[in-house]
Structures are given as structure tokens and as C-alpha cells.
Amino acid sequence: MAIKFIMCLNKQGALRLIRLFEPFSGDAVNHQSTIAQIYKLISSRDHRHQSNFVEFSDSTKLVYKRYAGLYFVLGVEPEDEELIYLSHIHLFVEVLDAFFGNVCELDLVFNFQKAYMILDEILIGGEIQETSKEVLLERVNYLDRLS
Image (cartoon, rainbow, N blue to C red; front, side, top):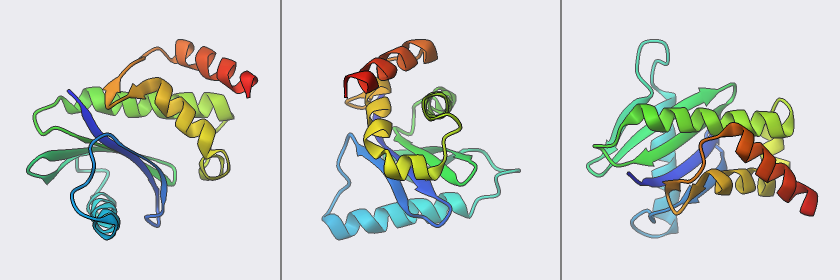
């Protein structure tokens, strides 16, 4: 069970956060087109009647969740359990919300280093490291006081 990438996109498809644990194939132009394909695929789905899981390619399944105006997307192996990853997306958003106090897109834009700090406490090298919200908040608050 390894995560290939995690990204956060707004409703217009603008990338707000991305962490690649396996590189996209091709050059930088291909990266932009891959992100655009992912956005087009998840934004066109009916969120009331379709699941939050979709096959993206032969080797990648997307697990995503929309919170307000932001899409949080994980790229995972096709045979991995989707609900586990959906719960980790929710954990990430809960920690962001508790840390920033009702997180919004502008918090991610102007405090991206803190958002990446939180992400790095949850995931390292595509593997989930911590699942306790309380432990995560304790760690990131401590790191925030150091800076």
C-alpha cells in the first residue's frame, strides 16, 4: 500500500498542494496535462450519485473528496482499499482545519509551508506515518513554535 501522489485543487482546477511520491511519466508539460486530466475527470462526476473512487490509468486509481471549494486527491494502486485512503484525506483536512482554525483556500496559498509540514507529518515517502489527530496536532504545533 503506497500512495503515488497527493494533490489539492480548487474548483477552477488550480493546483494548491502537490506531493509526488512516484514521478509522473514524461516531461513538465506532461505533468500539467496529467493534472488537467485528473481535474477534468473528478470535477465532471456527480458527487451525489457516484463514488469518490475512479480509475485513472492502468496503474493508478484516484481517491478524492471535495471539501467546500477544494478537491483533495490521492493517486493509489488499483488494488488498494479506497476507504482507508478516504479516511486519511479526512484526517488531513481535520488537522488542517484544527491547525488553521476553519481552514480555507487562502490558508493553503499563503501558508503553504505549514500545509506541507502537516502533510509531511502524516505521509512520508508515500506511506502513512501517523493516524492520530491529537498526536499530529501536538507535533505540528510544536514545530510551528520552533519557527
